[in-house]
Length: 587
Image 1 (tube, rainbow, N blue to C red):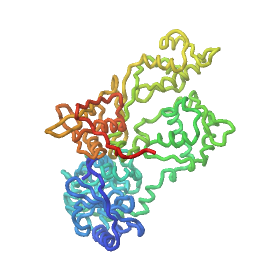
Image 2 (tube, rainbow, N blue to C red; image 1 turned 90 degrees about the vertical axis):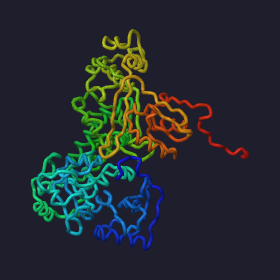
Image 3 (cartoon, rainbow, N blue to C red; image 1 turned 90 degrees about the horizontal axis):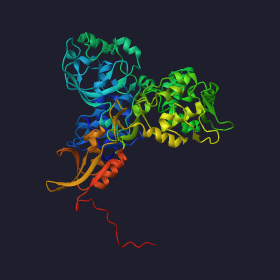
Image 4 (tube, one colour; image 1 turned 120 degrees about the vertical axis):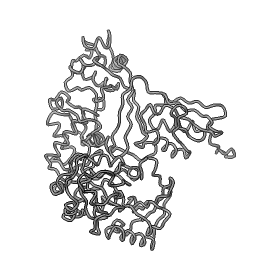
């Protein structure tokens, strides 16, 4: 239902009161059982928001949470179909509102992309709040065995007997709402327990043991008959709200202080190796913890210093100082890191996990029009070193090549400083200048150099490239990074006319690997003017009207380097300046 990032756009709201609220609750109770009315707290504002795009769709909110979707927004809520959202199912428990189709966990990644559920991917059915099994055409929830949180909401296309029969084929459930769709992104991209990237992890091992798996491959076929499936459905209790609540407790409450100590130490090493440079020191301990350690923790995990044996951040950092991992500023009331000992054996042996596997990469999404995962990109000038820096890397204990194999000037500067410190290559009479040894001389040449000039010389000898980072929308999240030779590609913005209408054309965006359709939708929303993707004859985004100034400004905010944007506006085809009243007297 919502498979494009530009589909969901709320257009105003209506607050329900009195008899309208009662009518809505009665309609939900008749369709979904008594539990549905529990979603609306007595003092909560019940809001109805609309969305255009062809047939009008209505969304029913309780305060800021969207709990139901009304596909036919023109009909009264008590006379039309109402779909519970994933947020509603996560809050009350899946089987408290809908009958449920169980799937093998590996199948979830296909559902998260909006694909309809195929019959071989299903492995059972759970009854809904009425106690009856679903019939063909009924709305059902879809969830993975071993995790009580729903993956999708859809319409059952086949009888239950066909769904669980051996040798079953074809589509079983038409997916209408799913984890990672545009509605999910428009309502804050919430992520329940066990949903890591585009995979679903087990949070209820007892259910896995009771139902016999759910971890089979997507192509495996269940050998259970329809009668066996119904027997399992009768034996399996409906999701209890307390079960869901327990599953959503932070991981910190489920592990021992010793486990949390180990997790915190790992996150410190990860941050020290991948984020914190020597030039960033000294650094307040709170900055290290909140801006570096927590964002780079493993995706789906949690760290909390209060759940560790140290209880407080100062005590935890003190324990790292006792292990000779770092040095703290003496006499400071708040912990301040002054040095990280990168030659420590434990630091040298630590292997960082990939950047895309961090919590920041997986769940760092935004719904803002400019910084949306569909459009926000980052372009950096980087350099490939080849084998030119291999000797310096080997000579500095604990040094590793950057993850993508490319270098920023700050990376080169940090490596040079540590090499010079380790070899004591600072001039005796001027500790700010470097006297190159036999390893640095081929890179720098003859003479003495400041750290800045040495960095510039080394960078100038490397191969220039650019790195494009494009955050990915949907359930998987993460960031797609590509390294390309040369300078960032040019983007051309020019004005023209098409069939007598003024237009602004944007060429070259496809070279950055962005979703062109999604970007056009966001540009349309930002400028309040129609924007489409055209083959003209080159691929281009075409915006109605002369908007060259606004488009350039928007592209710069979206991450395109300003030096790579070229603007051409013909005479008489320029964006008009905002008129200012001339009769205002300045005092």
